[in-house]
Image (cartoon, rainbow, N blue to C red):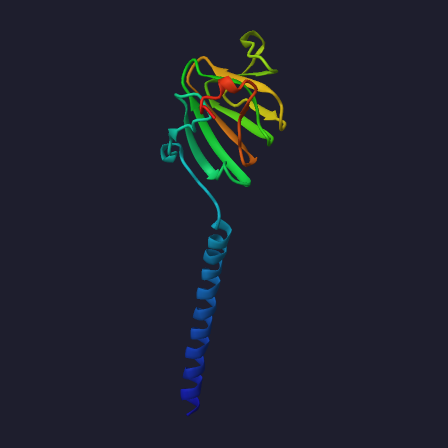
Length: 167
């Protein structure tokens, strides 16, 4: 009888050890799943481009990478402009962070577009724009920029005639 209990204890010990090991192995998986909740990972080939909203001149493409730029909260978008693209002087209600992904984006401050005084930002360049700062932008070649900030993102043209949406 002693042998029965001894063998039974050995099996119980192995079962307990196997259960402990499997629960320890599962812990990193569930902690990894918890850590990944809410993450976004997008490779360039997966970026979904669509036409930019009517508040921007025709020809640009836009991709939303994170959030909803039309609502309160954080967002990340990319804007692809064709060569010769221009955005007339305007301002935004919220601050904006812009990084040039490819090409060169020319930015200028003020109420009138003065292409001779714009600053060219090349790929990798960064621009922080405080809320309500008057500025304009243009590209000479196809350019892609990434913009992030807190929404809602809006565009208020200084001259209502410059608003392509016809509000």
